[in-house]
Length: 427
Image (tube, rainbow, N blue to C red; front, side, top):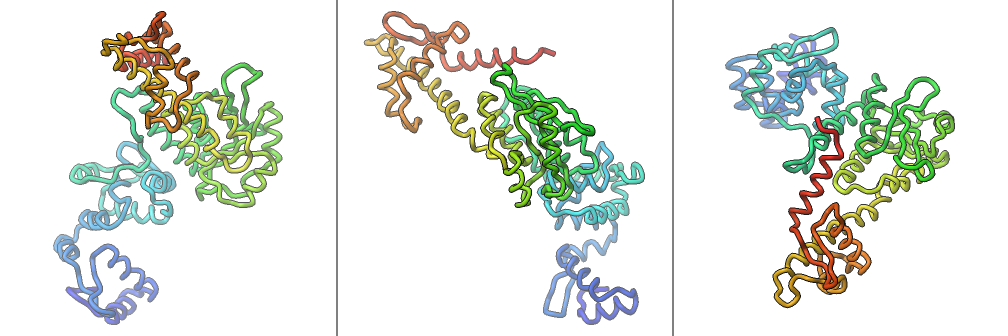
């Protein structure tokens, strides 16, 4: 339609007369070419080819055209890479685009267009009627380019972290993908079960007619423990609609399983009527984002599971900030442990005290420590000293002259690492 340059009226007339293209389609087509950086507007009515277009026209290859798309649009080579080793449908690819690459508004139609172009370039092929896989040509293409990494990825996992924590990436990805896979509700139920288990709860997937989807128990004595009847609501739209939640059924499920609380887990909850009704019926609404945050926070700073009762007690949108103070107490304990050990180790070089300190001596040393928002109490210091002096840790000892260090901070860390490894079955 365009040579090195072209007038819009001439292009429009040519498209209508020679190809029968509607006027609205011409405008969309021209806009797409501009967005692809294949043409650019010289004046209000004059368009010219870009250098990229000139280079592509020399070959006219479909694979080269795909490279032009990759340069200006998201989820092109990334889509090909997702089909490397597994067959996926339009809907699954759409969910991956939304969840793992931040394309919140990508539609199935847009995925279909990408697949059609990639098939034409022989970079992907049908694995079945509605699923696609990469071709050898597609694999060769990927080897030549760097592609965007998934946005849903593990954050802050250090070297030496246990394997069970290294699975966070796949857990969070599956939780997000399954939350939008409305055609496969069992998948979301399984992901929710795994997510609660990652927090340390006991979870049983029930499902089926007349049953709650997942029944969750906090470990411990029945007198102090609690349970939650969890309903999984997956939806391709992202936000769970009011029509999808039956509060009478949720109450029946809670009573049937003698659960203490009712909860709905979904991708997101933006419907005001749904939120209002949840408050009226004593149901907690937990979004996937908040669920992921809760797990990350727990893996970073583990608190007693019974403290999460605060979240399940407050109906409506789950308020995960209710346990922030409890998390901060653990953080302060960690800081105090390091500060007490550092104080004793530093004191061991003093010829006057010969390394012996009492609680009051440590308090005087730490009360002006800016690492603490408020000075640690004598009771907190005493409890920490007794903990470090316990046979299980054994890095501090007590005599009539006071406490003194028998190890260094790395020794404390090694003790914790040893006990941590023994919490998991050896393979």
